[in-house]
Amino acid sequence: MSAKILEVKYLKKYFPVKKNMFGKDVEFVKAVDGVDFHIEHGEILGLVGESGCGKSTTGRTVLRLLEPTEGKIIFEGQDITHLKKKKLRSVYKHMQLVFQDPFASLNPRKKVGKAIEEVLFVHGMKSEAQRRERVRQLFAMVGLKGEEDKYPHEFSGGQRQRIVIARALAVNPKLIICDEPVSALDVSIQAQIINLLIDLKNRLGLSYLFISHDLRVVKYMSDRVAVMYLGKIVEIAPAEELFKNPAHPYSLALLSSVSGFRTGKNKKRLILEGEVPSPVSPPSGCRFRTRCNYATEQCSEIEPQIKCVGSNHFVSCHLY
Ligand SMILES: Nc1ncnc2c1ncn2[C@@H]1O[C@H](COP(=O)(O)OP(=O)(O)O)[C@@H](O)[C@H]1O
Ligand SMILES: [Mg+2]
Image (cartoon, rainbow, N blue to C red):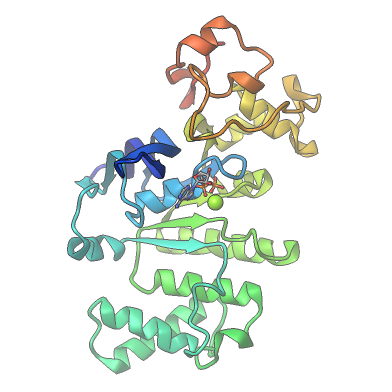
């Protein structure tokens, strides 16, 4: 078996936003624009970047909730890029999503345990007694023992996220895409959910793509971290290395915005000048060049390729 549970190759997702007079799409939001990464079995890969850089679109496209424009998604060695809906169901047994807003993803009129029983039914568990037992186990696993006969409104935000996690676990997945799973929660509750996710990962041998704009959370959670800017991954490295030796000028600026991460060559707070450019017409060459203190002429002419700058540390920047 390959050590990689997921491989994403040159993934693109463009959203059409304007048609010409003949009805042909002529303008696109290039939300994800050629992204490569992989996740190993048992690994947590963090994906960080400012709001709007394409993190959620990446996660949703990997799950085939959005149709990819280009590129490849390989899950456990199987190319699922163009898999038909019916066949995708067997992939969803192994790959699940937990996202930011648990309330939006729970049916307010259904007892939470019943909702999870339905998921089990759809995935082929026909015996009611078995389903009830499995739901009982799942609720215990996420710290909500015996609470399965309540409605969503009877729980707090943190508890609802536990229910969503239980539902994702119902089918025994191997990979969970967590899209800002704690961003809507009070800081005091965030740590509990993060620790639950880590504990479940270790106990069940899961892998996560952990999407967050919150650097502290990403640092705490991740084995490796990918930094995204305007539809591209600009740097990817083991978490400890990335936070100690960020290489890309964008990573440097991003880290310097959090006081605890200003260390070594990164002592001063760097202010990112200017606006994030539009993903409809990103800058030529390096996309970050319009906000980069180190930009030279070649940065506007040539797109930097991703280069290895250390053990398992990759960066796409002409400085290297
Ligand atoms: N359905 C859509 N149609 C058009 N543009 C979209 C759509 N979904 C997302 N976008 C755009 O794609 C870009 C990336 O969005 P998103 O993946 O949500 O970023 P992030 O999760 O990093 O905040 C943004 O510019 C966003 O406005
Ligand atoms: Mg998002």
